[in-house]
Length: 502
Image (cartoon, rainbow, N blue to C red; front, side, top):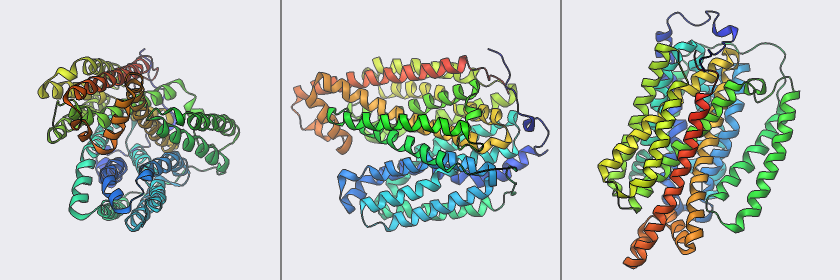
């Protein structure tokens, strides 16, 4: 319970710059924009989807604009870490920004939804490296104990991007049209390129090395069907079960061969030797639990508050602002706590319990709360969620050492992405399953609400509307209880994690 993280030799050899704060201030502006672009991209584009559908048509394939980017960025994240450790992270950041800008240009010129989905895939190949390389570049110049404070700043940027993304996307779409959402990325990425040029070029790892092409192919064969299965599972349609099962079986077989490949090759794409460490895989699972809880809660909360009449749309934004502000503030405080005390896992052990209890409270009481009571409840839940991001990053980077900073950062990004996809899928599945078992018509109506907003409820007779709203409230109660369980599992993993101090 009180064990100290064992540092790799390069983490204790005094190889870090003497002026840590000065080096951070030099690196921070260079990575701030890439982090913002990586986090805000999906929420900005999601806001523009209705306008894209109205312009290009092909509504049934519109979700591929989001899914294709997610698939590409998920595959690319560990690849950038793998190549960054070998050839230098600054160089790989340039490549990521270049591909990201190319994708943005192609997106803005796309004549159809399917072409846009393809160009979004290209952009995702660049976007996958922005976050992982940014985190690795910080690890290059900041020693383990000091990383907590600085990772808190990065976490604050991440949650701020999550909140600002929908607002920025809506403003650009309404003012300049949906293509401006993609044009906006070009000057931002160009500024990031100029700032990255200020960074010192550091050599990659030396020694014999062979590119793990088979590992990359097998990894893609795991990621693509898994994400597609999760995407198809959200609406709980019986007709989709054979496809979902087939995709998951294919992914499981590919995972089996991927693990065999990574154990046998001298230069594995995935850091299997690192992932075998108890402290590492437990920390990654904490990242999955946190990503699932945070993403699902923020994604579905506005719809829930609006449907239940707790808050009109213009006030929902204030709730989101409270949640992201609380997460950002707690992330920075947690980072400073790590730097001051060296303790890591105590923060998420307590914080995720707070979040779990908050989800239980939200499940049973939120339908009867006032707007101010909801704001307080959301703020408390967000405070708990803010204790995780800095801890996960610092712990895995420290265990990995400087030679594997890229691989470590890529694995963290992968864990968060999987958690986010898994969380939203499980939340939606519980919603639709609960509604389908009690009232199939309500389930179909809820699917329409997700696509077109809650106006469909207003067309019902008042008596029927009250029944449907009660059924929706019960379904959301089950989904929030699921998040309570997921968050509680994260707290248990943090409490029993052997890597409790840096």
